[in-house]
Image 1: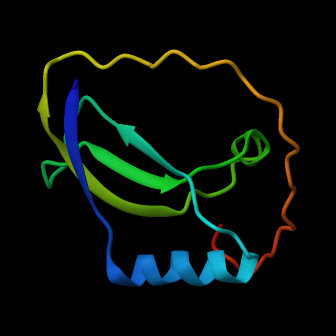
Image 2: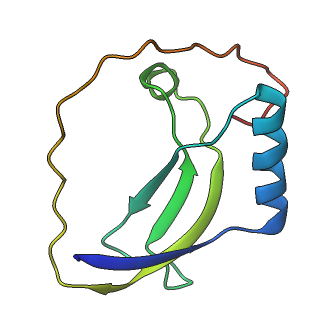
Amino acid sequence: MSSLSSIYIKTETLRTLFETLDKKGEKGIEITISISDEVNEYDQNLSGFVAQTKEQRESKKTRFYVGNGRTFWTDGTIQVPKKKEETHTAEVVAEDKDDLPF
C-alpha cells in the first residue's frame, strides 16, 4: 500500500450525480482524483471530478467537481500500475445533453 486518502462529497452533489446518471441511463460513473504536492487553505491536497473524454479535455469543457480531501498516510511512493492485456470493446457514445452538468 502506498497511500491512504479520503474525499468528502456533499449530499447535494451525490444527488446531482445520481439524477444525471439516471437521466443518461448510466450504471455508474468514473471519478478522476487529482493529488497535489501542495495543500490549500483547508489542508487539502486532493480533488475529485467526473472523468472527461480526450475531446472534452481538448475543448476545455468545465470539470464537474464532486469533492475535496486529503492524503493522510503515504509511504512516499506511488507507482502507476502495469496494464493488463487490453481487450477491445465497442464504445457507446452517449448523446450530449446541454442541461446536464456532465
